[in-house]
Length: 298
Image (cartoon, rainbow, N blue to C red; front, side):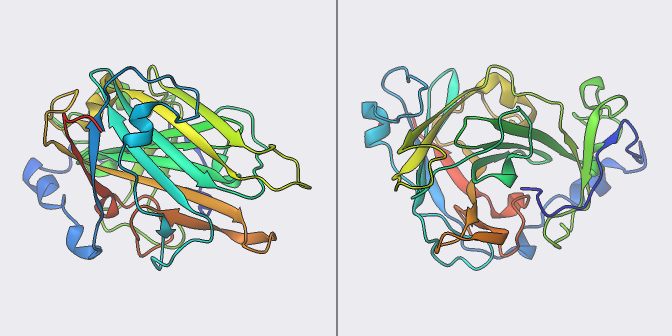
């Protein structure tokens, strides 16, 4: 989430040190895991037994049997959240699927335009990381989405897989980011491509209650997402797509909540994540959950 950033979007004017990093220098700066000494969650994503219908309801047998995450916790402290939030992950030869269940007594959303700043509403989020880039996805209860593809600036050197026309910044809608909420990542700045759309993405939301009606009590909402494997080619780092049995990816799921436990608007949204990050910053791949893919069905 980038709600705390005081950064202007710059169109085609990101300055990059093209060709100034040697390959050995770049590789030596890769791993910052020792800076974020969290106990990270591990999850096994099962293979579906039948095609999934993307309608947001999560009522198919595979979703009912799929392993659920533990309840999300405060992004900074790891303490319990006041609403229960859980996610399940499934996959097949074509797609990577996410199913979220979010407890909520007053389900509301305001933003309807794609790539609006969805983090200004209550939202659910997915981050999928490769070694040198990651993808961010957000959705609100109106099924409006926001997505960004992030590439670390140290990856712009001759021979890099990202030093290609698709990821040149000229004429693009690009947001440079060093951190969120006062935290600065030790790797430095990354470029966020705000105009990149995940090819073939499908998403749906179901509200268990009445959306935007403040005088009743809702039960919550759910979101169902389907990401085609082909769109993850930039994050595969040589791994098979779809994955092989036992392959491990780094994935984080989160929720940002603007309404407090007593119903008042919070000055800063509460962040709840699968793993504690230790900072009010969703953009720390070293804190993402280890997801192992299994060919077993739920």
